[in-house]
Length: 427
Image 1 (tube, rainbow, N blue to C red):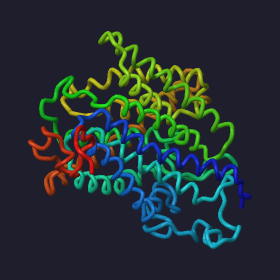
Image 2 (tube, one colour):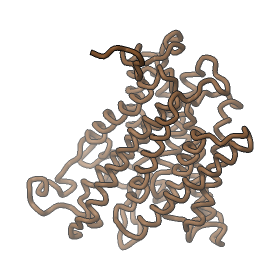
Image 3 (tube, helix red, strand yellow):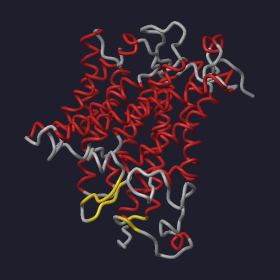
Image 4 (cartoon, rainbow, N blue to C red):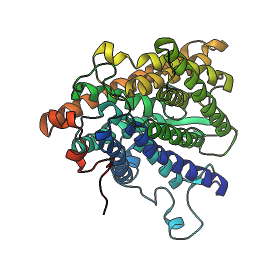
């Protein structure tokens, strides 16, 4: 048993709080980009995810994602249900004693909390693909089913592994059998959410009047506030994934600064070339694209290669957001163009420029092939399951609001509230 390190424990808990803040940050980011009469609905999709997935994680999500049963098995800790403090060695500690299972200097329950925030933000990310037209109740049903059938198993494949003397001895099949490198969730979070977003965009269909410029962000400062909160929280997301305050966490931290900064420049450069203007929404979207791309690679790159990844991600994602117009799916807030594409770029990039594995450094293309296989497996699994769940909901309780409500704005119909009440009297 490793002695308790209060510094590492504090680091993990603070990182958990930072990542949890990302979900309200995402609500602001998405909320500012929809029309004024749909902003409450848009933000509630994120807050609803926070409430639902937070409960499901404690009930059975952690048990499935971090099964004791080994490679990719769905049998959870103490069966399918709950967080068993005895299994974690924490019952005595909760009762007030000093004992308790400690890994890498922190209580395992701190890791449980950290991973809960990943589950929450992953589900919330999907909602940007269906902005302005989704029923809240239907979304909550989808969120619960998708988390159960897709996110929790995929988290098992990617995040569940055992290290002994610095060597992985067991784990989920993507990280252990394939040897995919994904430090903080390029596959389990971003490709996973992006593929599900694509599926839901297909299920719900296009917004009325879908075309380039269909709607402009109603509140740019709100969106930029969301970007700021996301970037702030992402330091906990990436550096915190080391689960220790050490040198690897420091590398992840500096790459989480450098890559999104470079991606911002890459995105606005494309905007300037294509449209003659660099926009603030483009700058914010570029930063998020860089954050997405660096997530799997943040501990595998020297910072100079992190900058290059950021530039590539900013350029590629700025171009990829137009795929919805050429391919005919309405991904309202570019979940596919930013999270799916950015996640793929960052995951594959490790196979080319990753320290000790990259083809550019003479290590061959094996790692690249494994990265591609892992990314493809998560993409297909998430897309197919999300498509099935989405169509099942649409054919039963209905997923999309009525046409007249969508055109008018859905806040008052779905939630009985308005984001703004200019000129209204307040008693």
